[in-house]
Length: 284
Length: 91
Ligand SMILES: Cc1ncc(C[n+]2csc(CCOP(=O)(O)OP(=O)(O)O)c2C)c(N)n1
Ligand code: SF4
Ligand code: SF4
Ligand code: SF4
Ligand SMILES: [Mg+2]
Image (tube, rainbow over all chains, first blue to last red; front, side, top):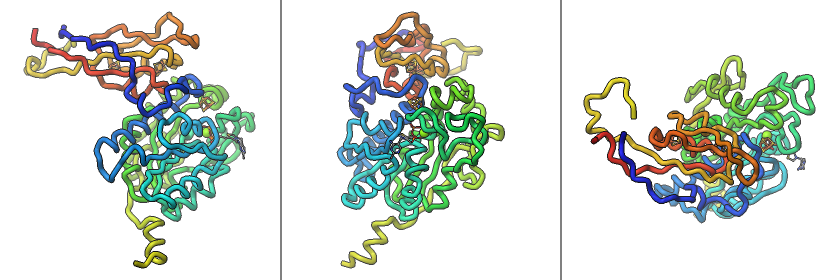
C-alpha cells in the first residue's frame, strides 16, 4: 500500500469563506438539493474570481433571491445579497444592474418564485436582455409553504392541492427562456453538480441574460407525496437523464418515462439592454 | 490501490490520494456522500451529532482518490477532501 503523510486536522470547508457560518446548519431539510446547488454556485463564483477574467471581483458579486426555500440562499451567502419579496427577485436584480453596471448580479430562487408569481418579470428580463444570471432551483412544487402545485409540477403528479394528480401541463423552463430571448440557457440536476458548476461559470461570464434550470429533490413535500425517497430521486436523475448539448428547446419537456434532457441549449451573442439603450439615449 | 492487472507504467504513475474531513455537527445524514463515493470510502456511523443525525465515517481511508465528489454533492458544507501527500507504489 502507498504510504500517506496525513496533513494536520483541518476544520475549514473550502467554501467557508463564502458562507455565513454562524447561520449554518441552514434550514434546508435532509436530502434537499438546494444546498448542493447553492454550493455549486459559490464554487463557480470562486472559480470566476480565481481566473481574474472579465474584472471578476468578489466585492462586485450580488446574490438576489425571492421567497421560498430556495430564496433563503441570499441569507447564507457572505457577499452582498438581497432577500426580496415573493416573485420580485428579477426586478430588484434589474434595478441593481441598471444602476451599477459593474456588478455581477445572480438571481438564485425557486420555480414558484420565478415562474408563477414572478413569471412576467422573467420573460421581460429575458426579452430586454438584461445582463444578469438567473439560477432556478426546480423542485417541481412550492416547497416552503407545504408542497402546493406549481407551474412546473408534472402532469398527474400529486401535491397538497392536486391530491388526485395534477391535471395541468407544466412549463418547460428552457423553452420559455429561449422563446423570451435569453442568450444562455442550460438545464442540469443537482446530481450533475460538476457540469452545473461549469455551466454557472459560463453563465456568469456571459454577456446577456443567462438562465440555468436545476432539478432538485424536495423529499419532504414533493418526494413524500409522489413516493420518491431522496436517494430514489437522485437515482432517477442518474438513470433517466440524457446529456444533449444543443438540443432543440421544443423537445425539453420533463418526462421521466422518455428521459430528461440536460445540457446547454442556447449560447448566443446579442446586444444587451444597456448597450441598446446607450445607442439611442447616451449619444456621446 | 488494487489492480486487476498491473499497468506497465504503474511505477511511474502517481495516483492521487485523498484525505476526507467530516464536520459532524453540520451533517444531516442524507447519505448522498456515502452512496455516490466511487470508492466506497464512507459508511454511516452509529454516533449521533448535536442535531441527532448520523454523520458518515471514513472506513476505507486508503481508497480515497481525492475526487471531491462527496464534497460537491453535500448540501451542508459538512465534508471535503484534500490531497494527501503521498509516495505511492514505489514500495
Ligand atoms: C405575495 C406572496 N404570496 C404568497 C406567498 C407564500 N409563499 C411563500 S413561498 C411560496 C412558494 C415558493 O415556491 P418556490 O419558489 O418553488 O420555492 P421552494 O420553496 O420550492 O424552493 C409561496 C406561494 C408569499 N410569501 N408572498
Ligand atoms: S421543504 Fe422541500 S425544498 Fe424546502 S427545504 Fe425542505 S426539502 Fe428543500
Ligand atoms: S474524495 Fe472521492 S473517493 Fe474520496 S471519499 Fe470523497 S467521494 Fe470518495
Ligand atoms: S452528504 Fe453531507 S449531509 Fe449528507 S450524509 Fe454526507 S456529510 Fe452528511
Ligand atoms: Mg419550488
